[in-house]
Picture 1 (tube, rainbow, N blue to C red):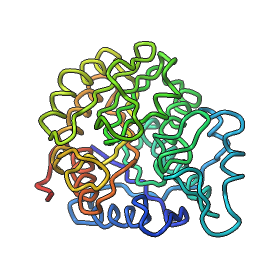
Picture 2 (picture 1 turned 30 degrees about the vertical axis):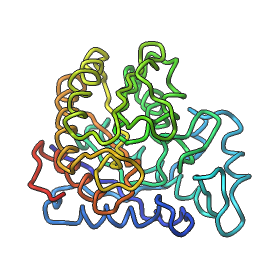
Picture 3 (picture 1 turned 180 degrees about the horizontal axis):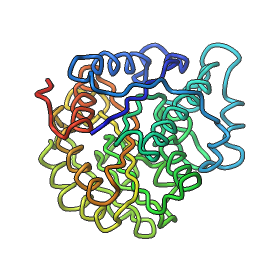
Picture 4 (picture 1 turned 45 degrees about the vertical axis):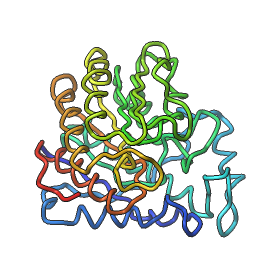
Length: 315
């Protein structure tokens, strides 16, 4: 396998208040983890700036105006209780989008088999009309639409293993049979969506997990619910909202996944991608707020993307 790592040089441009869990140190932890010799074979590329107007592929016509109005001339502004925007946050969001789209281009043009995009801010909570949950634009949703618009992709699957349900991604695609969205997440937990009976037009598969459950419950959810639904959909492109906050160390949730669980799950998703979409996977960083847990989860995820084997990476 040839794996592309897209990193974001201006990740610190999105400033959040001191003590906020979605902070620039997250990206530093990911960069340090993937600088280890284990990852020397990665193809590495800096994210270019993207066109924020592409947000209109998934958000309503006033969405960018809402973000610009909330953006302060200097310092940090507040959108809701958890979501902040600084003077240069939209530059960071544009670079994150550009990075995700460069990963998409590299995979669909056959330059690499798959890509992991280490970008921020996260995006899966951003709804059609509402930024929320640390998220400014729904990057993975924009990538899905661009894959359809630019490359003619017909069946796109988005698998979201962040511990929080991706209400924004579900909101955007709930009536669109060309996009399959599946999420495993803790319930009850923010944002309160993602019940098993939320099925869209048959294209949504939610697998809520009880607090304090571990990787075995996750495996059951994927074996018995998400993977069969994904196989039935038979995608021609697989996107991943890769959140690492189900890790047992994470302060914002109460699931007990180990770092190696992310390797197991990545391998299962790669099995489907090999069978149905020529190994084409583009993975985008979402959550993960304990730095050691984030580094361990990312390391296992990327190691399996590279060669299908967990390389004895530490928890």
